[in-house]
Image 1 (spheres, rainbow, N blue to C red):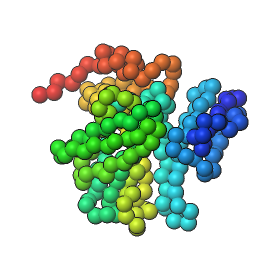
Image 2: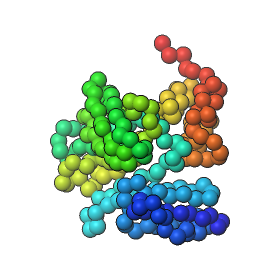
Image 3: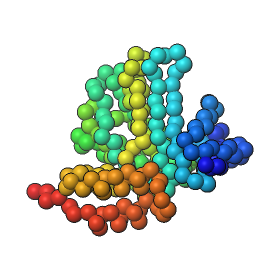
Image 4: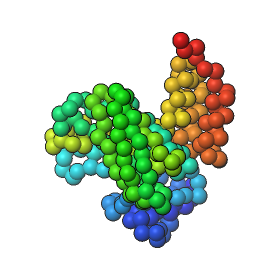
Length: 219
């Protein structure tokens, strides 16, 4: 109880007055959220972005945001477009929190490649291939943030709209290996790290888990 939350919704560098939330309580910022908006708190909190079109029945997305200590230089998405039709298009949006432009290289599951030039403090987006995932990596190792919005291209797709934060590559590898070897406790621990539980950065914890993990006998 009594968690102090500071929000800068319009990203002008001047946060609004702190708000206090108790356990289980929800505080909503209703509109006016700009690219680069920040949320900080003196205890663990969960933060989500909800978007939609008023009066569109089903159209909306609800995306959980990862804490900045979990931001990394490589992400993967397992979700491609369902078909080449406009209504089935899906985009990955990349945000660069740094002070200089970064290059993000894209490797598609089918072997295709692409590239994004993301300005400092800005964003760019990438249309996903059909029936294939993709890997997004910053060329110089700079951390960035990425999420995906499903069915972004068409005009009659509101019943199929959803989205998610992309999976950090290091976590995806650990989840795959631990699931393949039946180590459910490791899967739970990776989820805990991505959720920002506990002290310290994501990399030392993932490295420790990697050492503990017994790799499955791939052949």
